[in-house]
Amino acid sequence: MPNPFTPSFGAVPMYPAGRSNIIYEMNRAFDSWQSDPGISSLFIGPRGSGKTALLAMIADEARMRGWLVIHCAAGPGMNENIYQKMILESSELLGTESKIHINSLTLGKTVGLTLSKDSELDYSWENRMDQLIGRINEEGAGVLIALDEVSISVDELPELVSAYQVFRRNRRKISLIMAGLPGNVYNLLNTSNVAFLRRANQYILGRIDDADIRQTFRKTVECEGKTISDSALNKAVSAIGGYPYMMQLIGFYVWEESRNDTREITASQTDKGIEIAREKFKTGVLESTYRNLSDGDIAFLFAMLEDPESSLQKNIAARLKKTSAYVSTYKKRLLQEGIIEESAGRRITIILPFFREYLQEQKDLSEQS
Image (cartoon, rainbow, N blue to C red):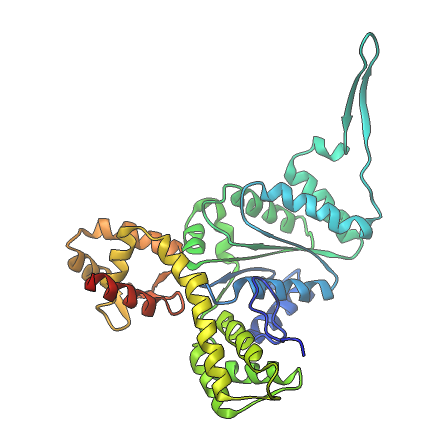
C-alpha cells in the first residue's frame, strides 16, 4: 500500500488539516474575482506551518476553476521568469508559438543578421505582462501568480506589486497570492512602495487544533485501508503539536513502521515512528537553523529561556547586560528568520516548532562544558 503521508517539500497533502476555511474563501475569491478581497492574499507563518503546501493546494483549486497558474519563489529575475512561465503555460490556450523576426540584413564581404524573437520585446515588462494577461482573459481564463518566500530583500517585488495594481485597474482577471515568514512579510508591509499589500487579506497560519489533527490523521490512515488504535492516535496527535509539517512527517514514519506488520497501526509502531520523525526534524530543520545563528542570536534566544513562555525585550536586555538598541538588532534578525514573533503586547515568543526544547538542550550542554 502506498504511504498516504507527504512530508516532502511543497507536496500537497491528501487531506489538509485545519485549512478548509481558507480554501473555501480562496475558491470564493476565484469565482467572484472582480469584487472579492481574497483575490489578493498573504499567507503568513513560521517554518512548519504549511505555507508552501497551502500555496500549492490553492494553485490546484484555481486550475480546476479555469485559472492559469504561475507558481514560483521570490528572488532575482523573478519578474521575467513569471512572464516566460506565462508564455509557456498559455501557449496551448492561445495557440501561439515563438516566431523569429529578421530585423536587418547586411550583405558584403561579411553577412550581418539581426534577429528578434518577438516584437513584444520592444515593450516594458509591465506592458508585455498586461498584453499577455489580456489575451489570456479573452480566452476566458484568469491568471494566478502564486509567490512563495516573499521578503523585503527581493528588489523586484515592488515592481510586481505596482504592476499588479495596474492590471487590476485595467480589469484584468488576475490574482496575486503570496506566502512568507512573519518577519519578512511584516517588514515588507511597512515599506511605502508596496503599501497596496496592506489591503490584501492576511491569513496567519498558526497551530492547528488537536481535534482537526486527530480527524485528518485518522482519515489519511484509513484512505489506504489501514486503521489506527486510539492509544496510537493519541500519541501521534500529542507529538505533532499542531504543526502541519510534523503531521506529515510523523504520519509518514508511523506508516512505514506498520507497513509489513498489521492493518492496524499500534502504539508501539507509533512510538517508533515518532522517534524517527523527531530525529529527522531535528537534523533537517532544528540543527541547520541553529548552525546559521550568530553568537548574538543564540545569546538572545538563551536569555528568552528564563521565561516560561514569552519574554519582554527589556528583560532580555537586562539579562544580556546590553542596551535596548543592541538587543533590537538581534530581535529583528530572528523575526525575519521566522524563529520568533512579537505580539501586540510587545511579548516575544519562539515560534519555530520544537526549537525552544532544542535550544534548552544546547544551553544545558554549553553550561556543562
